Image 1: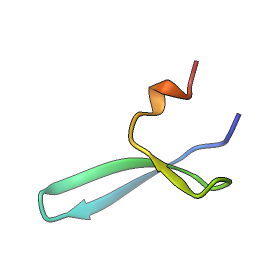
Image 2 (image 1 turned 180 degrees about the vertical axis):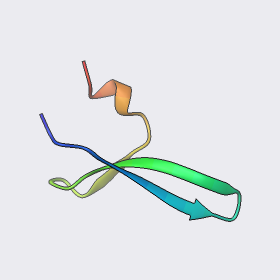
Image 3 (image 1 turned 90 degrees about the horizontal axis):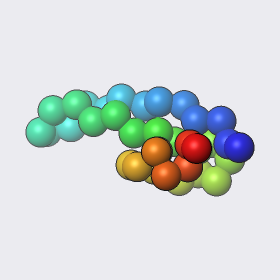
Image 4 (image 1 turned 60 degrees about the vertical axis):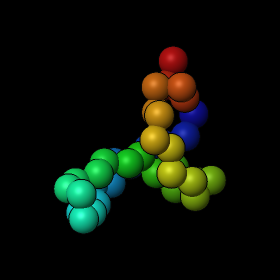
Length: 36
């Protein structure tokens, strides 16, 4: 299982929190699919 680090970025519409996988370098918007 990959370690996930939460990233909160400020956008024009407000704040957006995304979970980035440092190993595969991809942003996952729906983390619940990977965490069982």
